[in-house]
Amino acid sequence: MPETPGTAPRTIAVVGTGIAGATAALTLREEGFDGRIVLVGEEPHPPYRRPPLSKDLVKRVLTPERLRLKPPTAWQELGIELRTGTKVTGIAGGVLECADGSRLPYDRLLLATGGRARTLPYAAGDEHVHTLRGLGDVPALRADLESGGPLLVIGAGLLGLEAAASARAAGLDVTVLEAGAEPLRRVLPARLRHAVLELHRAHGTRVHTGVTLTGLARQDGTLVATARDGRRWTAHTVLVAAGLRPDVEPAARAGLDVEDGILVDALGRTSDPHVFAAGDVARYPDPHLGRRMRVEQWNHAQQHAAAVARNMLGAGTPFTAVPWSWTEQYGVMLQIAGHFTDVDSLAVQGDIADFDFAALATADGRPVGAVAAGRPHDFRSLRTVLDRRDRRDPHDRHDRHDRHDDSDRHEDSDRLDRRDGSPPRTAARTPTAPHTLLAGGLPGAPGNADTPGIAGSPAAAG
Image 1 (cartoon, helix red, strand yellow):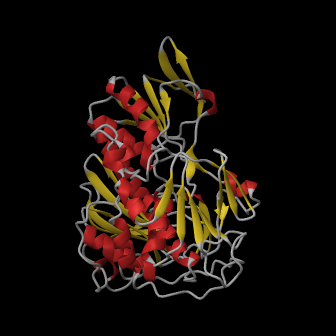
Image 2 (cartoon, rainbow, N blue to C red; image 1 turned 90 degrees about the vertical axis):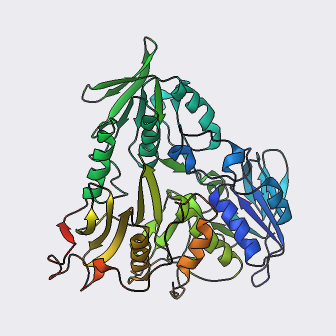
């Protein structure tokens, strides 16, 4: 059984060997936990970096050795028991039950199970229809791409567009289909979504939006995708990049509260106080939005897992970090932070068309998101603005803890960034002076429209 309240854990089990699980295990050791740590995951590989799977899909050979987070001996040296290729089938009474018949007692448990790639029910079983979630998906997809046939990407999120850019840069004929009216609708404000769309088209990638697919079938040796309005596209290879389904199966079987993810409080605790969750699978109360959310981003998974690991050891610090990510397409790097669903104004410094800019998005006069291209110093400064803004009370029944000072967060996240998967370290320390986009007040506020170098854009995002 788990330890009684008030006693220190002696065994912590972590389910999931992705970046969240690996970060949590490493953080536990970094924070001085000297008990037993067991890191369990289904994949046969030790923890590795996932971002290159889409960013460098065609550009270079992606092997476990090149992508690993740490050498195999490092886990042993840290006293972390790594059990790969192990599926957890049950959680009951403080014990993990595994498919190989083994049982693992724990005092505290972290679920970092991530998610599984969404598939198309009408495309199951065709060897040339792929998803891209893990290293095991790469060999067959690369083999198809190296054949040189046309590639059809279904889904214009970050993964789909990164894979499309990688394939197009290698000379492949690429078409992208998106169900929404625009790509990256949840990721960027409208002006920047349009810029990314035009970037792809300028490199010869065909992007079609507003596409509702009704079928994907093989006809005369070729894959044919059919839309509801009668449009058709043919391809040799199809990549389905339609997001992921959070892997809540172990949690649901254990009776934990789940709803589009595992429900946790601001400390990462589930409905069982001895069980925590972090990363892609965790749906947590976001203090900036005032509601629960789940984030599917590499950098967020690192930050959230590190914070939850500390809370497993009694830190009692609510998680308040603003999610951020980066993407590289056709040699252009975009760094993105915050939320863009309710944006009503966008202030831009620089040139969007040339991808040399910094932008700050606001909603009701509050900064809610930042994007930069080619300006890492600006991005770091604007991230600080987002982290230090006033927060909304999420009114979560679990979240009864006082808010804390965020002044050290960027130092912590810098250390975690070097765990890899983040953009090259070209930025200096976060400047202490306000960013020029904030000079004289928030962009979009009265009196700021004529500030030199700033272009205000009402209704910049939907």
